Image (cartoon, chains in turn purple, yellow):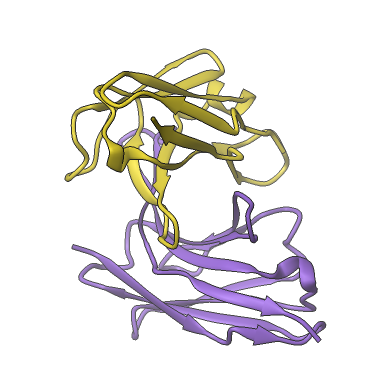
Length: 122
Length: 110
């Protein structure tokens, strides 16, 4: 079964760039989108964006100007960069596989990475 | 973008049936997916599509949808079902594809 393992810097200063990587084990990158999702302290979940094995991306409109998601198929890894971070970007960041059913209107996230806590503070 | 609305807190007596509601316009176009999150853990999938359970999820979990309202029903609720539950769906209301999550429902088992 597919497993995701993620890592990256956990403490940033304001204005720096957040950088996280997620490795995919036990499955191919093809056929799915690979997403980043975050959860601010005590709050709900927010989708950030996604990428497929060809490098095609979709980003949350409100974050689009600061987000870059890339993929390295040779390493079965995909990465998130979020520029110009502020305290509002403090959150636990998750990577997840975004699956699509037989029909395009059926979608789900499974599995999820273990999460990386990122704190933005001066 | 659209929003998905959930009741913040729901409680249920041990062994009883509980329904967790998710409402939003995006549900008229896309089926929801449902996630369970226990403290300190990553969310995990419990229901997707019309009413599909991933392997390992007991059949006391079920999903349904009518119009813009989706429901996650837990029958014979167990103590280990106490968790936060989130719904999510694709959203095509804007110029760009988006994904929206509900604010989450904290389920307390009494």
